[in-house]
Image 1 (cartoon, rainbow, N blue to C red):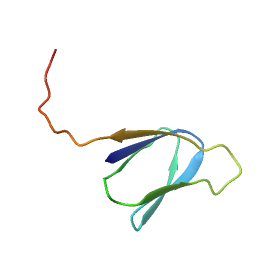
Image 2 (cartoon, rainbow, N blue to C red):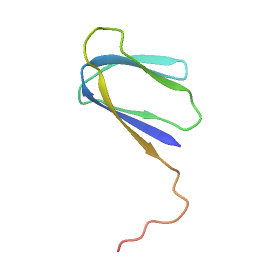
Image 3 (cartoon, one colour):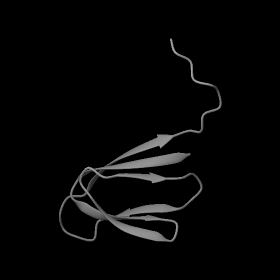
Image 4 (cartoon, rainbow, N blue to C red):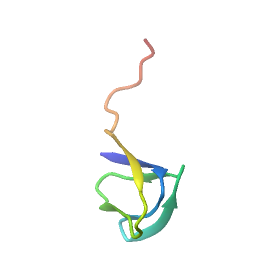
Length: 64
């Protein structure tokens, strides 16, 4: 299942596979399925993240 992280508040570090990046408010990060990921707060401040899990689409999209 693919995952998206939207940083709501603060600063932190996102690790996806072997890559590591500092992230901050209003950034959107994509983490593909089957690749290990982690979120780290190396500081003392608040690091708030919205996590959205997106299953792979199995049917075509329909407009209702």
